[in-house]
Length: 319
Ligand code: UT7
Image (cartoon, rainbow, N blue to C red):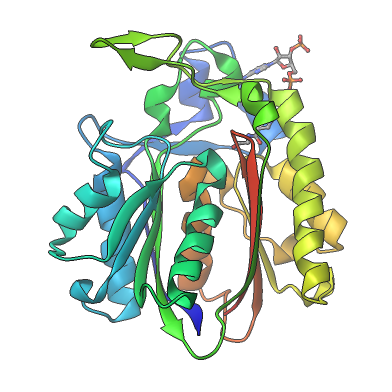
């Protein structure tokens, strides 16, 4: 048994924040942000708009595209680092909003920007193990609520959004291979330390990042993991039709494409208008390229991501 993506969907909040808007609130410039990251604008969730709301819109679109009934879904995984509440999980809240009464399992996956590849791999294993038939896998974030708008080293980089896929049991792959990694020794490079303790926030609740260290680490481990997946499956970079990287920085994406010998024409890039939406960035980019017709049946698609933890991984898909 294999698993195959049979529908995709995504959602971006209505409000956008441009680099020019940011120039008015923090000491930065459009030119700096574009030259260092490739970002022009990002979407910001409205007051009261929760991760599960973004996930709901994306999920409905994915379910509609898949042509299945919501009740057919027997596994929900939401990759998020900005859940609605401490508990219950955003996945259970999403399940309720979708009106799915009985589901095999529903849970959140917390691997920061690596979350979607972790979640997709997990859903694939559930399906291949016979424990689920139709999985809803979502990446959804309102990470901008964890930003210190006085910290120009982080606040210009992130955006909100959600992307979803419906993954179904299939006789043919589908998902060909996944490779995940984690190394907690690097936990301090990208973090939000704050916790709730006796009803009070304790520690710094804002995102802190050693940008240069993350940049170097990302280029290294992403190049390694994409080569690892290709080698194990006896494929070359030239066999990949579309590389869909986590959308954090155009320069990191260019470095990985170069390592694979791929032209940027084979890379799906949405960072300019989405910013870094953490776990949502890959399913947002995937849905964009599915809907505009770039991704076609029979093509080889390679997803890759790296995020706080550190976590990283790649998923190889035959569309
Ligand atoms: O999603 C998880 C993965 N996250 C990432 O992949 C992010 C990885 N890191 C990066 O993308 C890049 O490191 C950044 C885009 C965050 C920063 O780019 P950089 O080329 O590494 O810049 P830098 O941190 O070395 O900073 C260069 C200069 C510094 O000034 P000095 O010390 O040279 O005078 C910074 O203070 O740019 C300054 N700077 C800014 N200037 C204007 C930092 N942030 C800003 C800003 N606007 N927003």
